[in-house]
Amino acid sequence: MNAQPLRVLVLRSAPARARLLPYLSSGNRDKTAGAPLTAVLAADVDWHDRLP
Image (cartoon, rainbow, N blue to C red; front, side, top):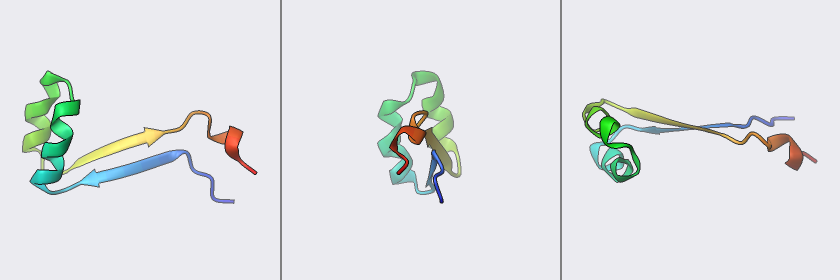
């Protein structure tokens, strides 16, 4: 069974990072805008509740 609760989204292009910027805190916007890529990690802590 492949049941991994972690999802990773990698943003490489400047337009993709620009779409993310309004959702970041002001202290992280400049760093993210200037980074070569940004990884967004998300995990569902209740993932086991939906296993068959």
